[in-house]
Image (cartoon, rainbow, N blue to C red; front, side, top):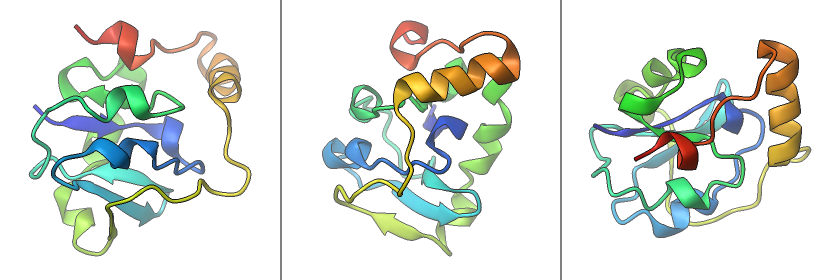
Length: 121
């Protein structure tokens, strides 16, 4: 089971999660502009999950129903054309805070999705 970056990362591209990844399995894609995890390289160590400031990373088996489409977006085929990110770089201009992300979810779904820390284990 790999980890999955969900739409909470879109337009934000925080790279805090990259800092502790022992296998450098994060890639930056442009459409949508975000990070993804190459599931073929991820060793399921969980090091990235608590570092994401917008709680965008879930274990694949625990991705909320509303984020299921993002499992496919973390496709290893996309990584061949993407930039491997191996160190922390600045977020995108206009990146949202976790509170702002949750407000958007509330507007979209009528509720806030569970954070990975409360969904995992």
